[in-house]
Image (cartoon, rainbow, N blue to C red):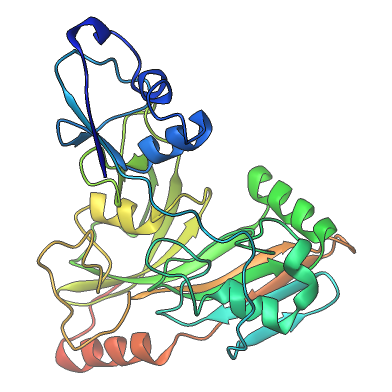
Length: 310
């Protein structure tokens, strides 16, 4: 951790430019990333890179070690739903991280996929080979991995064009009013808790759209089907929490709410995935059964309270 003092004469300077002139061993691009990720604090508060200094502040800079250049393959068993020359569709278990990140250097889905299909080492990023979209660590379900650069380019374009369809089952706290709805609210980094996401003003977040439909109601819980129009980090979790109905098992966005039974992970599962095949352009559709943890939760809710109408 480095601590720097802002001179009164530096008032009005942008944080990233001021920092770049004083931390010469780190590129400006990386400094901007460190700022956005909350590793730079002005008087203890994470700020944006365009923040204008006031003069007299203290700036703390944490420079974490760089990730290794290449990912090491790990022979971890995968549940493979489909595989061909271009794509690999897997059913990710809850508790597995998709690619290396802070605190999760090994036992990732990316490392397992690399061991299964070594050729993906040159596809996409070196730390996330073949990965075109993600699921949270504690979310389970379907995810497609590109095995060739052709597939990677095609799938990333489809994600931007929103022709990849993703449908989830979620069990949330409380009884939602209405049978269906849409949450259209921008998502960005929480300005205080930088490891969390939050609904932000349009100029500080990216557009995020989630469509939900009630599948089953219980006295104090609701089972939803949620479809994503966009794919932001923690999107479903943030959106349903903004309605006052966080996902069961979500300790980040659910506050003090606790599951009705001992529960590992989130009650959130990617049940359906479809996309255009990168080579044939035919529609590919895949589904996944609910995992045991979600089935057990639903069984408990059905047995302890009369199921209400949809």
